[in-house]
Amino acid sequence: MSKIIYKEITYENYGRCLFISNGIQEMVVTLDIGPRIVKYNLVDEQNVMLNDLEREISHGEKELSDLFGEGKTWYIYGGHRFWVSPEAFPETYYPDDSRVEYVISENTVTFAPPVQKATGWKETIAVQISENDAQAVITHTLENTGDSPKTGAIWALSVLAPGGVAGIPQADEDTGFLANRTMMLWPYNDMQDNRFILENDFIFIKQDVTAKKAFKIGTNNTKGKAAYLNFGCVFKKEYTPNHNSETYPDNGVSTEIYSCAKFLELETLGALKTLEKGEKSIHTEIWSLAKVNDHSNYNLLKNFL
Figure 1 (cartoon, helix red, strand yellow):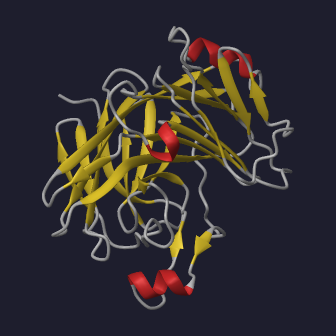
Figure 2 (tube, helix red, strand yellow):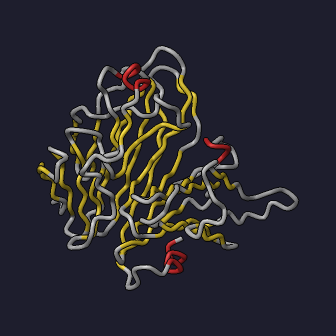
């Protein structure tokens, strides 16, 4: 018999949600909006995800209403979400405010929002919970339901609670006379920003609630690992990139970190795919949680990367 508990609950002001627990880790996924994985934590420990309960972060510009319908607004909501890269406005900012259907099959729950009528994308998230440890497999499936080919990459974004630090390993393949590392920077970056820590083997980005501007970096994370330390807990993501033979968005990156005063986003991306009608692409992350003794020493992350 499965050790996993599934229960519909009302969580904060997100409405109906599905609570999932194996007694070691807990997760809450929205059902009236999203889906968003708005809660992920070890039992009796703090939630690693940001919850934007005041709906402070949103987009309701005229261009968005023109595309998706009058009065429509996109809210970040917080938590983990599924987007499609490259980012474009307003197409990327689909107002995912409809009821989410879900199906439970053994230890996997598949969450399926309605097809995005204006874009033709169908996005589903499957959550497979480990029975025996603090681990989950998050599978993102993107399908083109439109009549014309569409190109995009699955973009898996986790909006994390403030106060922590993220880390990623640097690519270290021996490529001889050729470059082995890609580092993409955004126009608003200040390269003297003290949140940005560049080492030979690792890159760290801190979250600072007093920051005046955002900072974002993207890399060809060939090792497929990224982690965030906060509240004495390490939230780790793993995925399988293929930079040798696939094309990735934003000039070839598969991991991006965005830090602002309200949160930090730990983002992974799948390869760019051109999908005909009915074709799908898949991007999978393996999540884990681990309790550590130090709340702020970013060097601890090296043990997880």
